[in-house]
Length: 246
Image (cartoon, rainbow, N blue to C red; front, side, top):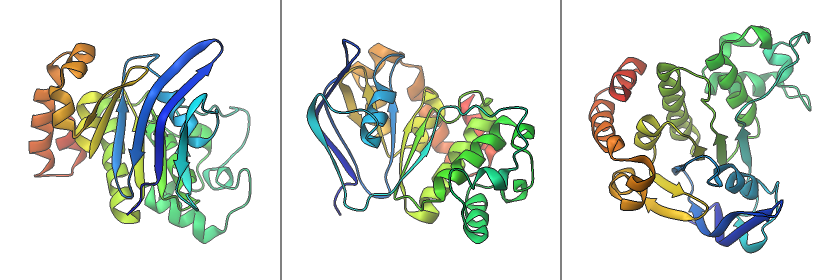
């Protein structure tokens, strides 16, 4: 089956700075790919290029015909004085049918929040609602940019488990950016280590052993990765995920 998105020799420059150089990238249907890298390594730039929000300076990005992308941003600011329920939020910027909204909330594990005020949600609930909004378009590619920023460790682990469940139920490919190496790498089919260019790319256990990865992040992740995988094969409970990630 053809890839959903392919970047070939992608270079992106803006503001007089080069953010990405000669990046090759692809993601296949149903695949979970995580991009990791230090601050300023071009992770968000790559996502924005894939979304079409910034142009390629050189190289090109090829998207599959009729590609539908759902996007969960790093953060979203809501006016605290604005009375806005979760259900009403899903109607922005255009109204959606009640059954579509209910299905998206259910897929995101937050069906009970439809009548809750957005300003009253916890961090984890807020991210699930953003996920529901992204799922409204029935995407075949779901992109998440540091979607668990600000969540505690068990909250992050539970959210990533939810993302795996969404992939399994919908068949959508998942492309994530995250700094939470211990949890995210174990939840991924493939990891791309980025630092302005692709340092290494492959299965989590391969990347965790790569000299380029260790030079950036040290050697601590590999042991946690092995522990997480052992626990994860025996249970999908958030408590187990939390214990493994510690």
